[in-house]
Image (cartoon, rainbow, N blue to C red; front, side, top):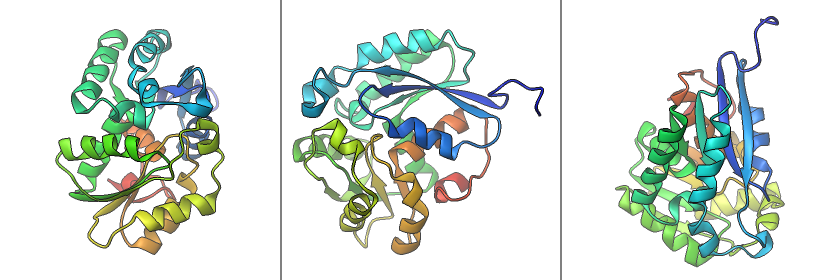
Length: 244
């Protein structure tokens, strides 16, 4: 295969937050042979250490400009990688942004929240527990999105963090405990929200400990991007989702 160009199987375009770094690294870790990721970035806020709901609510136009730029590359799919930025204004807003992206790029596009919803469908999840690093105010908007999508939220917990750098620097023990504490017995799956978290490396252990599927923002976005690209490979070590 040495004579083939990079991304001979699929080239994924990623629009990511400028103040974060975990998502593209985790995409690289999960990538099967022949799949590459190509990233452009947009600002979450003028002050990422104090981002607000208003910041999250106003990312669409920057994401559209980034789509126009990425679309110059020969990509198979483009993903907008921001969980709260794609749920904060509700389901209709999220769908509208994807439609705008696809009209520009002429290839399949997705957002993190749409990818998460597709993951819940693939795993046949009806009741979900949610762990986030966000404030209670942001979590209420996440809860609204899930219920608008027809799911029952059994529990949602947050760490109260509205500092993007702090989210990126959360250690494995904190993320693991956050996930364990959010779970409920009646949840069909656990969702760990935020593309800034470093969480894909613990999915397998969490699934073993909780005895249920675990979805993370980065895992779901990558999985959906692969499926939209026509790549159906089963990837070991990153959760039950990759076998659906």
